[in-house]
Image (cartoon, rainbow, N blue to C red; front, top):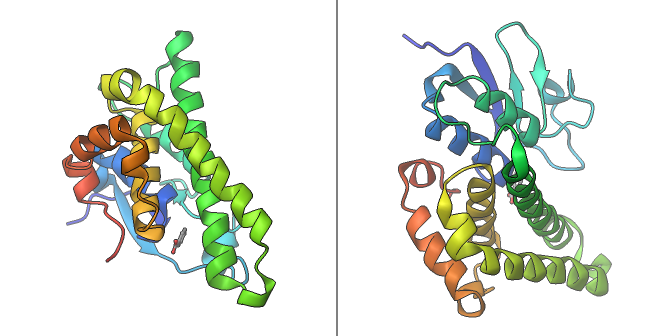
Length: 209
Ligand code: BEZ
């Protein structure tokens, strides 16, 4: 019998959903959440998702009392407060702000990658805006440069909000930009990712093939 008391609105292609799922795996709470798959795009919002979530975004987490949490930053914070182990988001001190800032940069990389995905996949080719696409791609490369600096010490030090965010961002790049060849330019990041991508939580949440 299912012990799930919460519902996660999700889609296996979403890197922000993946982040939430990795948090659930890493904190041993996967069985508390039932998954409800939703397909959505900027032009076709999903009625069940927008009912209590005007932005219509996933992931969204419905709690046992019916309250709805979004977005992924809020959900992972909630999940982190629901377990007794070592927090994956440091509660205070300088490490809290540094780890959250690295996580925020991973989200910014993902925002840029998703904008590129929407522009190139959803919009007709004659409407693509090349300079804008280049600007988003440059943001991704700058973020990878900072992660390269952080890879061997900061990212490798623990698998927490920062490392999970970066790992899910790299997974999404491999999924949607398989020709990017970022590993050649960022070898320390590549070595770190080769290791963390083998964690059970990452293997269990890979994007669809
Ligand atoms: C994708 O197909 O890349 C995607 C799907 C859902 C959410 C985010 C990204």
